[in-house]
Length: 288
Ligand SMILES: C[S@@+](CC[C@H](N)C(=O)[O-])C[C@H]1O[C@@H](n2cnc3c(N)ncnc32)[C@H](O)[C@@H]1O
Image (tube, rainbow, N blue to C red; front, side, top):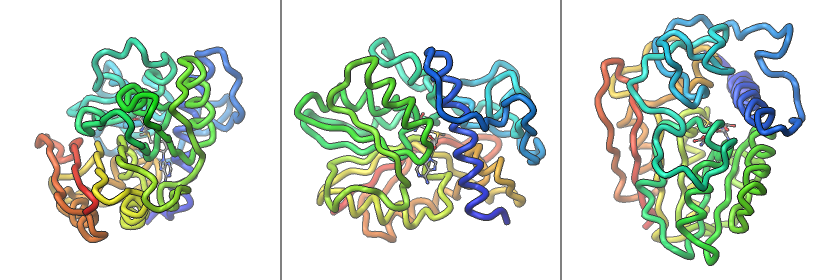
């Protein structure tokens, strides 16, 4: 079993590389240079064994064997794809007002905004906000009387998201570096928590759900898109497969039980069965 620290490092490397690529395309010099595609860098050891989508690629690559941690053209980094789920910005309509680099970095597996039923004035937290795509959609819906926070543990993603916020002069959106297992906000601070293809990456999902419950106000909503299995996941877990949103995904029943266990009610999931058994689910829950 791969250990939690190694998985975390793999996640930060992988999504940091994605953020730096988007920042580079936007003409911004990013902070770090340890991407797995940096000159001379070795690809992660994980073999390309599982034929599932790599969520870190964001948009669906053109060919089934072309997904990798650094972009559609780099097959060196591991997990291959079979596109049973729409990824990244393909999940959204009407993206005109969304910063280009937020669309480019988008690495979600669904559209939590479509199920969040956001209202003007609400306070929203996005767990694992990446380049900020869902935060920008949320900010439009909650308006100036509301506020949106994005939380992410990858420093380059926070830098990218802040850059994106400046591009659109979004005054009701802020981004904070931190971990979803230890959310740096007060009890009851939010009306709605959203998240897109992130909780599967955590090595301590019960703690994520405890923290989500704590920072939601009574009556608050949890609205999540995430990868789940509808059958027993295959054995064998490399850090690369975990960071690609494959190996860390839970069986859907276990996922929902973990949410109920911390006190959420009205817990439900909507998803389509796939041939592989790995699918994207829309998950609903409410703090009583
Ligand atoms: C697959 S990407 C999704 C990003 C974004 N939600 C989107 O839809 O584009 C996963 C993101 O979650 C962040 N992440 C993963 N595990 C995390 C954790 N334990 N705490 C905070 N952020 C985490 C990563 O840094 C990365 O930016």
